[in-house]
Amino acid sequence: MADGSAPSPLRYSAFISYNSRDQKFAAWLHRELEAYRLPGRLAREVQSSVLRGDRLKPMFHDTWELNAAHDLPGALREAIAQSESLIVVCSPNAQASDWVGREIELFRELHGDNNIRAAIIEGDPTTSFHAALMTRSDGQPMEPLAADFRRGGSTRKLAALKLIAALTGVQLDELVQRDGQRRTRRVMALSAGVVAAMGVISVLSVMALTARQAERLQRAKGEAVNEVMLTELSPALRRTGRTDVSSIVHQAVLDYYKDQGDLPDDAQIQRARALHGRGLDEETRGDLERASVSYAQAWRITDDLLAAKPKDPERVFLHAQSEYYVGSIAWQKGDGAVARRRFEAYAALARDLARKAPQNLDWLMETAYAESNLGTLALRQAGDAATAEGHFARALATLRTISAAKPNDADLKVELADGYGWLANAQAARGNLAAALTNRNAQRPIIDALLAADPLNVSARNVLLSNELATARLAESRGQYDDALAWLDRGYSEARGLMRSAPDNAGIATHMRAFQLFKIHTQLAAPPGKRPSARALTQSLGACDQGVKGRSQDELNQFCQILRARILASAGDARGARRALTSIHNMPGDGVYSRHWGVNFAEEARLAASPVLR
Image (cartoon, rainbow, N blue to C red; front, side):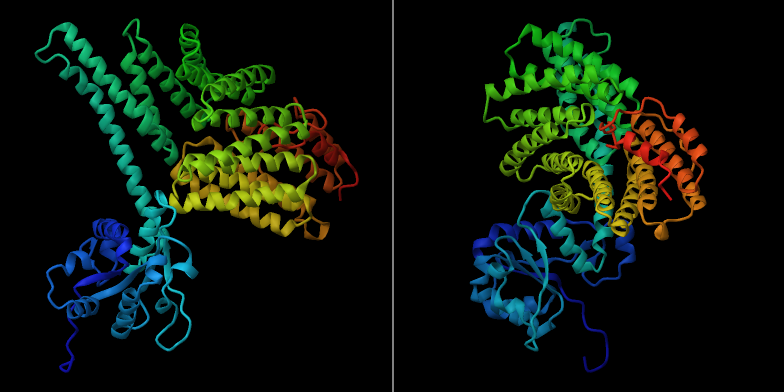
């Protein structure tokens, strides 16, 4: 301006350019971006002209903004002139659109090359980006920031956040973290509201009703609330790692049925599902004894239900879950015989379900779980890696089939990634390190996509930790010690960060310790010139009894003792190494890998006792 005063603020935060065939998506994007509220502190800290309070300024969407304009070209030029950024909806339709090209060129003419964003909804950049997007005003090639909306579901939310971050100048990772925290608070608030509703039910049921009518109303409303808690709240809380809140949800369902006497079958089914949920909460916290009690109670209920109606698929499915949970706890507690009986019973029920309805993907999924369970027994109990590889390969094939049919199922993607990991474990045990590494590499894009869509997905982060630990161990086995140490340091940092969002998750705490111990294992395996001193290794090792309960931690304590023996042996203290080894009890036999961490204790003990280690 001639007088030197500041220019007037622009009216629109962005102009959305699209082809008319993509109108539905453009309308959704317009609503999504304008409705987003920036987290309070970020809104206060960000000095951005695109904001009005904690929201973006209005966006221009020509179907809505120009329907009353008489001079379309003039109104269009004015709208682009008044827009801070340009968002181009990219598709094969848009690539072929002369009008989209002219809008891009007009924005560049008025505002320059910056602040042009792409939202890709179909195809790839070569088939969806308009030629005008790919060249700067000076004729140099240009690759605009692109948000990927192609996969739908939760990935749409992430892509929208990517655009919002670009428009406001906020770092994407900070925006994603704040958005995830906001969603967690909403789930917790909803949990509290539903639990509070349990108390309201009894009040509603006695107002102006006969005793029998009140009883029926109370039960109907109570069971409806229970169903919401078990099917909606419980899975959402598990994904965010909030077992403290999910425990309240499961106990509320169980308390509802307490002292009600004989219950109808539907109510018994809800009780069994709540016991399964409570058991999972207890298991996640590392309390296997309490989890065992919860699962055993559920097993008795589902066994009675199935005996009454042995051909009812819902009851077959529910009892299969009980068989699995009881077997899993037995496995973790070291009772291999009970674990095998329960896993085989579970496998039989899973196959029965699949025969009853071959097209039911949820029931087909049970056969994949069954194969994986039997593979675990073969690998970690019998030491039969070849048989285990067959089980895991069949499980993975089934998981891939189901995942192709349900591409947006995040929980299924976690299972698919885990399936690749177990197959890699069996291949590594057979010495096929190249195949094992291939399958570990196949895990990564699945996990990365899950965490890009939902950074607070604790289940996906647990698989990520397993992947990083296993990849490090493969690198060590291949003599790539520097790579192994880098993976272990990265995994430890991931686990430490995850502990902040799921502080009562015992599995994450043991993973942190596992990364520490396998780092020492790698340093001991490295050539002497790259190995820290015995004193430094002993300091890094720390106390072997960390005071944490659980079979998984017990294994790590034993592994720690073996590492202590190896450190002593490396320093020439053979007597001290033998003393350290004598403190280890119930060591798995030769060729058998430990249940939780897949350590060949017999081989490790031989290394510790060997005078060759220097």
